[in-house]
Figure 1: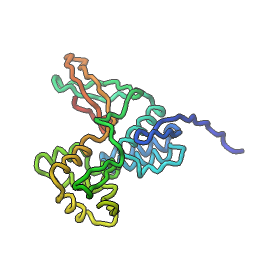
Figure 2: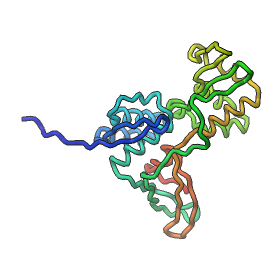
Figure 3: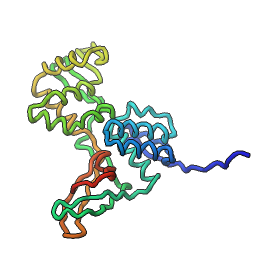
Figure 4: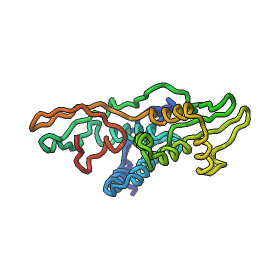
Length: 250
């Protein structure tokens, strides 16, 4: 006699970058196991690989998660997590004033993708009257190696290597009039050398595109249960939303 079939509900979400609706199911025990094992490692790359695997398992429509933007994956994961184990997150927060640990309630239902400005993707940047590039937002593969916001901060302090690595990965095409060059046909060194030769004014547009990429964000307020210390906080990205394996400093 076959074992009984367990009915699993389905839900719908929208991919932020495309507006395309998709259907998904909640986590099963096997996805919970993938997530817990990744969190226990403390390895950012392992955690992002787990995110991609969970989305691949849970999204019921045909979607290649490898080509989704990083913020698409973060947003969809939060939607799936909310329908799987609860839509209220309670991370442990350490008060910076009295060091008391307390829980903070975060409602995942109104988490949204924050955009600094609406831009058309691929984003075109002209270097001359004919020569320019088009850019796309970084994928999770890029973000798992370096957060774009951190990279821009490092570049402003003189460490430009990381920001150039992100920029060349975000190049969708290079063009000279009607002639199109596929960045996949060139090495990272060749692309970096090309970017190093662009005018400063145009390069600033590239930096602005990277630094102002959409992010999954939520504004929250922390209030210490012991000393009543209060602080406004903005949660960004998976680490902030799911840093529950260890206390988070407010």
